[in-house]
Each structure stands twice: as C-alpha cells, then as structure tokens.
Length: 473
Image (cartoon, rainbow, N blue to C red; front, side, top):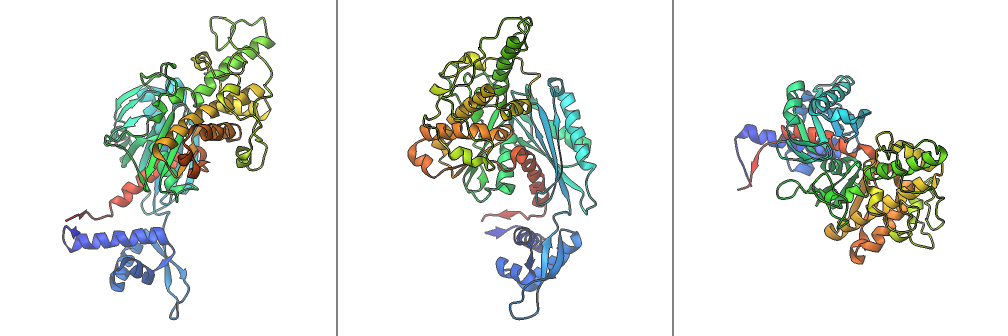
C-alpha cells in the first residue's frame, strides 16, 4: 500500500484513524489508541489535542489503572454536529434530527395527500420538514452537517431520481435544488437502501453481516447488506424486489409489469381490499345508501359481509411479547387455501380483491384500530397480506441465503396479525437448507429505519472529508 501525498496527507490519514478509533471504542485512553492503531504515543497525543480543539473529541474522567497513573479517557463528542434525515413516502414525510451517533433528537411524521406530490409542492414540503428539524438544533461546533433523503424509486449515483412509479416522478434532481435552498451537502438514495443502512448502523441486529431489509409500505423495496456493506448491483439499482412477479397473469403495476409482489403485500394492497369490505359493510348497515367509496357508480360491492371463518388462525396479538404469537401454530396450517377471499369464501385471493378501489379516506391506523377491536374480516385481511408477504420473503431467502431478514416500514406495525401467516408461508415455500439458519425479525426501529439511515449518509459524508486518499500500489 502506498500513501499518496506528503506529510500533511499522512497526518490527515493518522488523524482520521484516531478519530474512527475513538468513535468506535469510546471511552478509550491515548495509550489504548496507540496500542490498537500501531501509532506511536507522541503522534497519538498530538493529534488527539487537535481533535479536542476541533470539538469532535473531549476528555472525561480517569479510567482504570493497569499499574501506573490512571489514564484520562477520551470520548467522541456525538453532539458536535447534527444531521437531518428524511424518509419521503408516498403518503407521508418522516423527518428526524440526529446527533453524529444516530441518536434521534427530534422526529416528526407529516401526512401527504396526492396533491402534495407534484414536484414543486413536494420540494416545498421537504423544505418545510428540513426547516422544522433545523429549528431544534442545539448549540454545537458544527451545527447541521448535512441532509440525507430516502425516496421510493431508482436513484443514480448523482442523486437524480430516475424513476419513482408510485410518486409518478421521472428524471428529477431534488438533490441540487435542496442544496441550493439550504447551502448544505445533500445525499439522496433509495429508501430501502437507507433503511438497510439504518438497520445496520443502529438496529437491534446490527451484528449481522448478511442482511436483507424489507421495506413494506405503500410499495415494497429491499435493501441488501452483503458482508457488512450495502450491495447496489452493477448499475446501482439493486433491491427492486417489490416488482418481482408473484402472480403470472396478475394485476397491472405502475412499473409496467403485472403481478408484482407489492400489489399483494403492501399498505396499498391492504387499503384497496379494506375499502371494498368497509363499503360493503356500510351498505349492509345503510341499505338505502347506494353510493359507496369503492363503487362510485353505485354498484353493490362484490364481497359479502360474513362472519370470520373458524379455520383462520388468529395470532394472540394481546400477548405482551408479540414474538410469542409467531411461535404458535394452529392445528390447520395457515395457507392461501384456507384464507377467506374477498367473496367471503375459502380459497386464494382473487384478482378482483386487489383491483383498485377508492381508499383515499382510509388509513392503516384506522384498520389497526378495527383489528384491535376484534374485527374478524380486517384481521383476516391482515393475515392474508401477511401470507403474500411471506411468498416474497421466501423468494428472498431462496435467492440470497441471508443470515437475517428484517421487516420494516409501515407493515411492521401489523406484526401481531401478520407474523404467524408470514412465517408459516416462509416455512412452506423456502428451501429447507436456506430456511434452517435464517432469522426473520421485525425492525425495532419500526418506521424510522429509512430516516435514520438517510441521516447516517449525511454523517458518513461529513466524516469522509476528514479521511485521506489512499492509493493501492
């Protein structure tokens, strides 16, 4: 290995090595840094003094003595600066302000309506969210060091959104515009990638070397961690598994394909089917009302209001630990054949069940409330979508043979109702040797994975400025 440049470059490289060590090992002594890095004690002492002067490192109390004088311990000053992370969804903006270790200082979720998704309106809403985050920045040496944005679409290496079908955006450079507005470095990436980075950096399962993060929201995206690094693919567009075909002659998707996974296992799929059920129930309760949200023309919905089937295994979602529900199995295994379809009959869901309906006035929160109250049809709906989620997860496991699969984004809120059906589907459909050692978990970060992952991109960019260029030679 040959280090290019002069003594100044060598000093910069050594300083970045010391800073990385303090960030990872804090609290740590100067002597321990010298031992871990191989740098002599005088070099470590001089560069630590500079790092303290920069505000990135501070001294704390004495550590344990190994026989001589107690060493003064060093801490990374995680509040030397702050990062803004934005998760831009189809129907929300989630904003976080984090310190340099990813700890959330402020967070806010703002709903979006369809009219907010025009380019100019969306840029204004993103800017408003950033201003809100920046208004809460505590005093610090560096202030806000950058902005990270996760979006549901294909993003190139320059941060240009090439295609975001669910937003109906194409070839849009929001990075340059946000940089112009705030005069700060901005990083834009696919939200499933930022979610995977958030899980890897701050999640409960960060020790996993090979991880698949499934972002299940309005659509589905996948972030892939291989040997501790984000896998982007040859062109940088890996992870679009929401557009993996699971229904050969299925519904048309906004991407141009048919039968895509996200049409059957997403928040959009849930809202579509729930709109039909609730419209039908409204008609049953008010037979004189012939106009229903799912049928603007007045035609009676095609599903019938029937009580829940005793064949449906209902997870124990009142258990203190939701994971307990996932370990329970009914006498009759959950499968597509014993789930009631939209016509109230046992059998696989029909294409009509997933066909577009007006779900504009519905929210996932409303449906969760109904499920908590024991609405059998909503619970059945959640379980059916859990099964379809399991089909895709099984394909992911068979393809990548990962150590860990993490389920995140909006559908993670449905864990009490979807976990059993999803896991049973995975067990039925994944190859035995692949399934044997894989762990499937729900994100402890919940909705926040993509936002904190986006903030981590800004933090990485900030620290990259302190690193020297090293050329293999």
